Length: 213
Ligand code: BG6
Ligand code: MG
View (cartoon, rainbow, N blue to C red):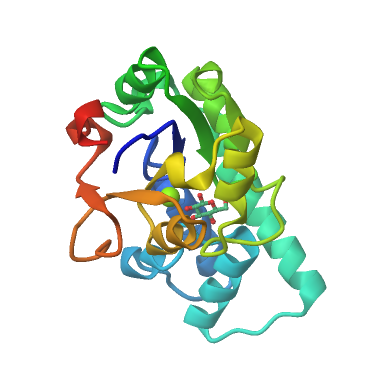
């Protein structure tokens, strides 16, 4: 990686660990439908859109629902999820995340958020970090889910930086694939054996420094 002019950050799993709240809400929905949903099953939902997540949850329970029923179930899950994220505080920002984004900005590197979540703005506001991003692309602004590169390409375009000068920070395999499909560099947040397509993998942004870019 050299000549990096912009850093694009995924939100869930990179800046904050919302997976626990998604899990609680999906598990509650599954239980109400009469089956269990394990933490291992939850791994399959990382980086995946809300409606696709619901399909996976229903598949785990061996249940089929009509499209209108699916919309109601997704809305119910989201209402429970929103109740939980409304209680979030800046203490939940993952170690080193705020510091690294601030270091990028201080070095003149542009910053963007690239998340599948339609709740991104609420979460950023609860964490008091909305101002750290020059551009915010969330689930309301895209039509194609990761691994499609749309979310990151829109971020680069709004920043006015060519994809080859951008690096994406992602915890999901689909997100790393999206970055690569968009012609960008990718830093995986997690385990190297899982995120092997990334150019570099670190366990968290607390282990990231500008000279690794
Ligand atoms: C992603 C999460 O960031 O956002 C997924 O990793 C989630 O687990 C997706 O399903 C959509 O989130 P939301 O908040 O729009 O339901
Ligand atoms: Mg993520």
